[in-house]
Image (cartoon, rainbow, N blue to C red; front, side, top):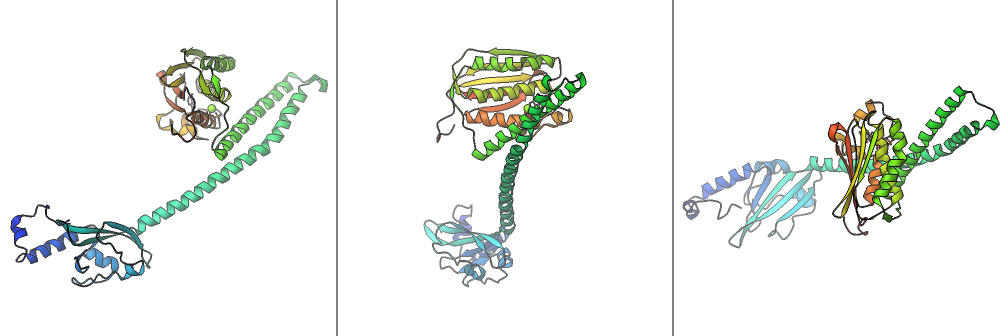
Length: 379
Ligand SMILES: Nc1ncnc2c1ncn2[C@@H]1O[C@H](COP(=O)(O)OP(=O)(O)OP(=O)(O)O)[C@@H](O)[C@H]1O
Ligand SMILES: [Mg+2]
């Protein structure tokens, strides 16, 4: 390091004998300038110089010419052999500190001149690392507990809810007596809300199952994209019209897609439901699809409230809802997109959201025509 090509002039290099003092001063100054505890050893392992940081670190005087005083370190594992190669080690000391030691051999033209030992106190860094590891373990356990709780709670809610729904149905049966108009509308409200609860519960069960098994079983087949889109749009047409929305579908011709039609329908239903929910009356929903190379690209865009830029990734996580959806009084649990993304990813595809013209949202699904790559291969 302090070697031949470091810009040292011939004059200085030539007069090593008389300039010994100068070289010594330079070496000391260099060591002091290092941001670490440092020791220089000669080829015979004797200490040539050490800086004050080193002395403070070990609380020991190192006399030039003496053998290195690595007492604390020796107790913690000894001075390594093979000093002629670059080595790094983390050394826990008895007083609780951890030091990182780097040994850099010093050579000149193939000759071994000794070694530069540097020490950094990494105690704080190690402590933070340990804290992070502990937090990670705790978070994983919390996630597991949350998952187990959600699964158990949804199961528990399912049975009474099924009973509520069937009693609602029984009450509408004229055999049990006619209902007044008001009673019928109250009953209808109970039924509507019970249905909504049932949907939330099945979403919850689906997400917990996805987390638990790291994937749903898909049934792959040949999917006609245009037919699938038409069915999805027609299924929701009534609701969209009721909400005063205009729906447009445009699908370019293209190859059959290898996928699970039923699950992909779930994804489209979620996107169309969102588009209708987050778009005020008078707006427009457009579904556009076309093959691009090895992929089918399907876009569901609307003219609604849009997704704020800083939430365009987060909304795909379970239970996350953007502030404009939360404060705008739109009902929701924040599960639809998490499920949709999981399904699309199981197809080897991706789903993202951007802004649409007029400030709405534009969701884009990209699905590989050939389906997901075989297990073991990376996409
Ligand atoms: N078309 C859209 N326009 C604007 N924001 C949207 C749209 N679709 C989704 N979002 C935002 O993404 C969030 C997550 O959507 P997601 O479908 O996962 O949940 P949700 O609609 O709130 O509830 P649910 O679980 O009933 O679907 C929404 O709360 C909303 O903030
Ligand atoms: Mg939704």
